[in-house]
Image (cartoon, rainbow, N blue to C red; front, side, top):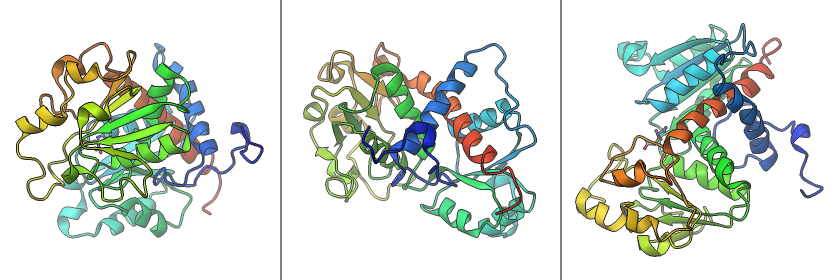
Length: 326
Ligand code: NCD
């Protein structure tokens, strides 16, 4: 560790909100990962609860569909003994014409300690964080095509479990990176933690325009070349709900060119990890034999997500929310 880098226990620079991983220091990321390691042990115990957030309130405000993220934030809050409320757009006053920022302010008036927001617009959690007056922490549960920080953190935790430090690893992210908030957060985290190579693999139509320059990744349009010798393969779902026009000729053609089948896995390192944030489209981006096969850690990713969300809630809702409003 360089002298300029604070030790993990001195990392007082945890962001007040977790809006993304761009610009978040290695010390802060490591602090969250360390906290999650502790909770990972709890997740495997018969008695899974602690009193850490007793008396605190977490509100999950979801303006977009979610299975994994919403359930694991809810469970994480409950395992920490917080009071947890879930609100989805379809059941809120948004249906009566209230703006979503007024919904946020209304919820803030009920004095929560953390607000987890998922929204189809990139930047929505940032706007919410700016609108709040209290100590309440805003946690981004996925905003448009921008970031999904807790997903990338759980992915990093999963990689570390199987491979040790991120530094030096070669990682291929395959598929619809153009519309993927998951990929963007993963790229920031992997860069910050010193991955040797980050490759984006997919057709030109599904690559972010800033791919090679701003994000500092290598772009491959040939999947077999892009997977050569990588330590980790992360598959992405085609984000049909965000794609305008025909980005690929057909799903069958897409699978032929970019789908992860057993033959493609052979291209990678012998002990490759196969990952997917879910929800998966079997037969579109990944073959069932691979998704359910020996290299897959897709379900452990979900379990690790619980530990990451416990860590994030505990760090941001407990330590910051101890006194009167800031
Ligand atoms: C992702 C999301 O919503 O961004 N899912 C998730 O949170 N695990 C990925 C996706 O929808 O494809």
